Image (cartoon, rainbow, N blue to C red):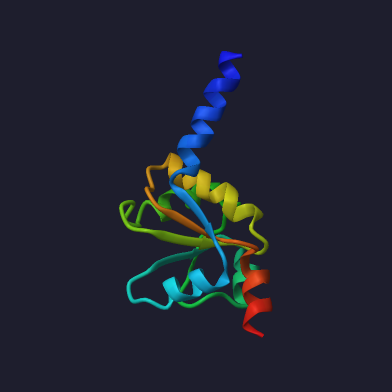
Length: 118
């Protein structure tokens, strides 16, 4: 029982640093200057199109994932997205574990972005 309580506490701590936002909120934020925005899809997916001035850091490239994200300011909001929202949700939890204080994840990912832009 204590084990499950511990897991829920850890999850609760992570989620307080992660915000999932919709298209409109994400669009307004990434239009600002000096915003930290990262596309966690594969390089092949990134080449098909991305959002704004996003930098590509492949979620599946475990060697580079951490080292590349450590180049960002952990105290400033960081906006992330993937194709559908699944990878970015996992990435968001990794970032919180790395010390990021404010991770903003695009609900529905790039598929949602493209659908709303049309």
